Image (cartoon, rainbow, N blue to C red):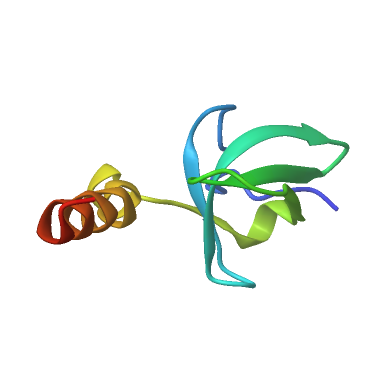
Length: 77
């Protein structure tokens, strides 16, 4: 299947959302047509179809880490 010219092609290290699952992860690479993503806070990689990947603004990518840091500060952890 050929991809349209306007399709998003993520680079390794970029943050992307897998629209089929709603999960956000860092692009680790790709094998054939599928991309491997890893959750931002670590964990098991998953594969995503390229047509389901959309770019994630930096602010959205940082939101979970900021919320966790704020929570630790609030609770003195």
